[in-house]
Figure (cartoon, rainbow, N blue to C red):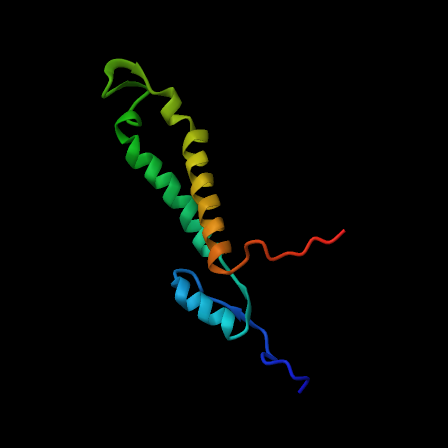
Length: 111
């Protein structure tokens, strides 16, 4: 060969749910790409699920919640609120994936 200690590049399929240690080992072994779609989908769903669990008692009707029978719930059942929780959870997971994959501050943006 050409002296490259890692002459083959690997794609880590099925990496969702892998430990950070397993991911780091795969990188050391020559993995250059890891698919994270399943993890990001789950993170989004989990954010929505957590929103529903947190505000469950406010999501049972348009009016009436633990704060009072006549209290409105519009700000809780607005779908943008639950979707925002999903987006925030997915963004957090993307940051974790970047850390897991050693992708923080690795680009050399020369002018």
